[in-house]
Image (cartoon, rainbow, N blue to C red; front, side, top):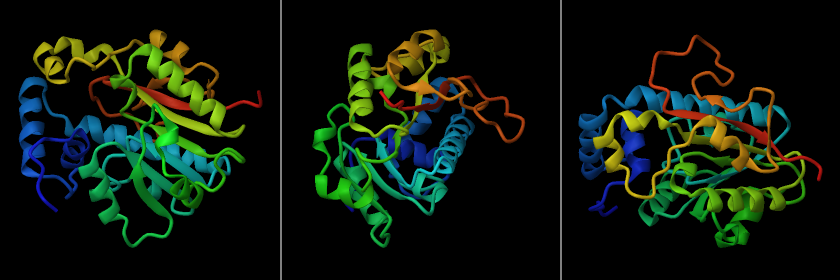
Length: 248
């Protein structure tokens, strides 16, 4: 694969998680961000652990098909590894990450990777959707929407989540997170996130879910969502949870 000349958040996260699917440009960007903010690996390990707990909780409800938006690198405890009996369609908009994901999953018959814009589900290849999420629109599925809310304004996020609600079958589950206002205390690092980056308080985020109803666990710091051990002392950078589509 030709090495990219621009860093990718997805591959930077792979670096922080200790993965093998990143390039020198990603490592350089990750280290530059850490110089402005501090160590990031523990934060993203906790975020990936939250993903695992959320996916397992959704699978425990009988869900066996997942649609993942903004999927990044499909390794290091990603969805198909946490729900090995399920089928999974990973999607992203970055062509380099998509090709990398397809290469990683080339030998899998239960997980695929393709283009998909979370704000327009019509961009997903229908053949891939039918193959890897065969129950889409007819029976409960899991929708994974992590790392995306921070880059969508309130109007776009609300519309996108409402469209997903309308398209998914009753009983479907949404795993979602958002960036808290914690990064505001690091203005140099915040500036590196770009002009589209949005931080939100928990109170401001909850209404944006619209008709999706959080489980009894609520929308909380990801380290605390169904924590299986005492949460480590990491910055309170992300909140998240699982929400369910009702019968309406």
